[in-house]
Length: 185
Image (cartoon, rainbow, N blue to C red; front, side, top):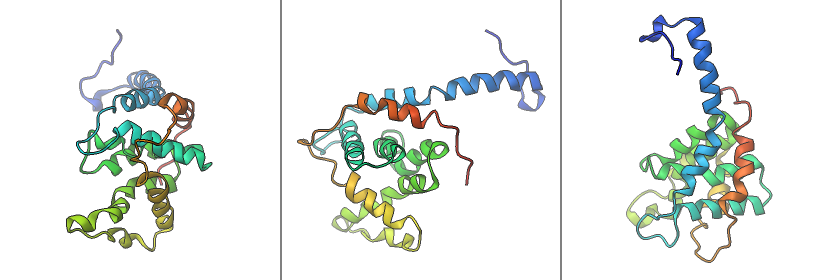
């Protein structure tokens, strides 16, 4: 296998970086497949919930689809908790970072902040501030995030809900992750 000549990035040539760029673009083009594979493995639940993380994600995405949301928002609903497994203390930011190059500023913000907004439903039971989301009251995406949590997140823990299978969402995920990345805001 051909490799670059350098051992320090500062010593790399244009030829080296053109070579790497080709490989990196190929790798990036398979992001959707890696995400779907990861999602398919989320079949176990965190202790106490009635459904798996995968089922929660499928319910969220199915609800967004049934509500005729944009493809971008359907994919965001599907992936909004992908960080639970690897970044439980900042899962929202993790999911938002994955989505950021491929979604609008609005969708990115909703996913990045949904964890704090979701606290509205339970923080007071644990001695916390259920209105922590109010610090964002003046943000233009505040109500959109409230709506996301209400319509697609907090109500998607139902073992009797009939969600679409992961395979149903595969073409939409592939479409979103094949977009030319947005410029960073």
